[in-house]
Image (tube, rainbow, N blue to C red; front, side, top):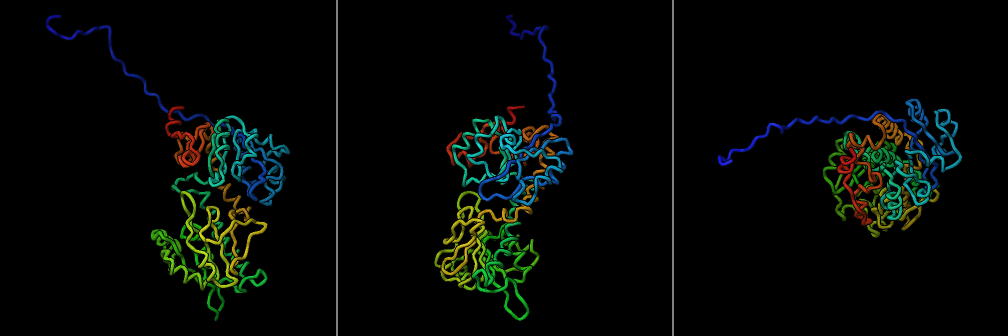
Length: 404
C-alpha cells in the first residue's frame, strides 16, 4: 500500500432505502358520552338531538345521562328518538372513550375518569386547579378545550358563537332592567318619534361589543364605543357598515359619557389574565340613578370597579343607585341557542375524527384541532397552564411526531 491509493472492496455497496409514506388510518367507531351537568348553573348540552342523529347514522354510539338536555328544554325522548342510549348511572356515561361536557372538568369528575380517555369541554382557566390537572395527567387523559379549538379561518368558533349570543343578549337584558317595574329609569331602550334615543356606552370593540352595538342600533339607541385598539374600532365600523361614535379609552371622555348614559356594557377581553378596570368607582357614582351596567367581562374580573359576580338566580345588585348585572355565563341563560351553536362546531369535528380513526389520530393531520389540545395522553401541552401551576410542559408537535 505504498502508493497510498484507497482500498476499494467489491463486497461493499450502498443501496437506496425505501421511503415510508404516511398512511391515514382507517375510520373508527366512536363511543361518545354526555353527562348531565350539575355545576356553575350550566344549562347547555354539547350535542343537540339533530347532531346525535347524524352521528348515530354514521355508525357512532352516543350514551347520555338521563335529563342531560333538560336545561336546554330537550327531553330524554328527543335524544332517544335520535338514537342515543339514555342511562341512569353517571358511571356508565364516563366509561365512554370520548366524553363531551358543556361545563369545565371539576374535582367531582376525577373519580369517574377512565385511563386514556378523551375529554372535550370548556377549560375555564381561572377556575382550574393544579390537583385536578395532575389527576388528569395520571390517568393519561387527552383533553381539548372549547375556548382554544380553532377553525379553518384561524378563529375560535365556539368562543365567537358564545360572544355573539352574549352581545345580542345584553341589550335584551338592559331593556328589561331599565323598566320601572325592575327599578330602572323607566325608559324604553331605543327611541320613538319625538323622543331622544336611549344612550348606550359599550367598552370593548370585540365580538361581544360588535353584536351589542348591532342590537342596540337595531333597537334605535344611540351608541358610543370605547376601545384602546384602533384596529378593532376600524373593524367594528367596517363590519357594521355604518358610522358609530368611537373613542380610545381616555378617562375624562369615558367619565363624561358614562355620566349621561342609560346603559353601560363592559365587553373588554384579555388574552392572559385579569381584565383591566377602566371604569372607576367614582365614574359609577356619577352615573344616573336607575341606569344599568352589564359587565360581560366579569368572568375575567370585570372592567367596572363596582362589579361583583352574580348568578342567574340573583342576577343583579344595586350600588350608587345603578343596577349591576354581572352574570359570568350569559349564554347559559339562552341555553337552547347556545347548545345549537356548540353542537354546530362539535358534530362535524366528531364526524371527521371518526373518519380519521379518532381525535388523537386526527390531531396528526389537523393543526386547528391540535391548537385545542391542552393534555395529550397525560402530557401537559398548554404553555400557559404549565406556567401557572409550575408543571412540566411538553411540545405537542414533538409528542405527535414521536408517536408515528
